[in-house]
Amino acid sequence: MRSPIITCKGECHCACFIALRYTQHHYFLVNTTVQNTMAITRTLCLLLAISLLSACSWLPKEKDKTRNWSASKFYAEASEAMKERDYELAIEYYEKLEARYPFGRYATQAQLDVAYVYYQFDEPESSIAALNRFIKLHPRSSHVDYAYYLKGIVNFNRSMGFIDRFVPTDVSQRDAGAAMDSFDDFSELVRKFPGSKYSQDAHKRLLYLRNNIAKHEVHVANYYLDRGAYLAAANRCVYVVENYQRAPAVREALQTMAKAYDKLGLDKLSADARRVLAANEAKGKFDYIDEKDADSEPLGRKVWEYLELDEN
Image 1 (tube, one colour):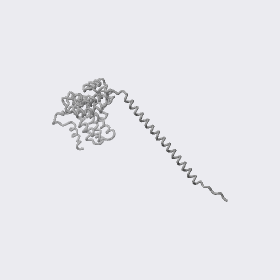
Image 2 (cartoon, helix red, strand yellow):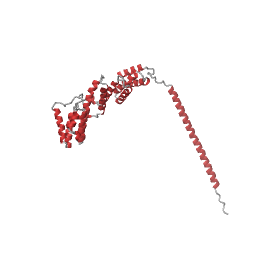
Image 3 (cartoon, one colour):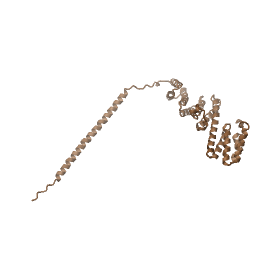
Image 4 (cartoon, one colour):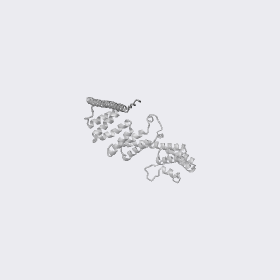
């Protein structure tokens, strides 16, 4: 008789159930341990942060020595710092003065003085911004002419490099943007305040700037000429003759103009340009007319008509 076959189906189910229960219990224990660890860590971090804050509260606070300063005290200290060439400290005091005492003569003067300090501190953009603000806020101030003058000075020196101040160089070959800004600033000064004590110096700088800007335009014309842009070169020269009538660069502009017309095959215009040049050189100088004569015609207009540029 065959022995009965014993199956382990029920026993296997029991073993699996026990294993599952063990796994769940182990996971519960592990998870509980992780959660407890994280909670302890968070608690320790919080306690550490609280202790650090408490410790910081015991540190001595930095005292602001300007806390009780008056407007006059601020201005005196800022002026002294400027005199000692401590420009960064001077800027700080001037700005604090205006922030704490925005009204009054000290604040108004500080707005102007800080522009000068920015200029000395080699921050021309900040200086120009401060001056524009002063002009906008105080258009009737007795010192607004100085604001225009200082704007011109800042832009005037921006057009010159560091080396230019010590070694003679041809600044007309540089970008003329800052020079033209300076020219506009000085022009506005002499137009609005002809009797200002700064007008005489502004006139001299205008003459220098005008000659350099005219020469820069001729450099551009020669650049075009060297690269075969003959019409552009001729037009630049016409612009110089029209707009910078008393500048020495007019002579070179006429010379370049003649060369450009030669390259374009415009022999008549080239010959006319040379005749105008020769006629003025024969007198030893260009025959500039007095701008005050309302009935007279500018040299630029005469050259324009003589060369028949309206017809070409």
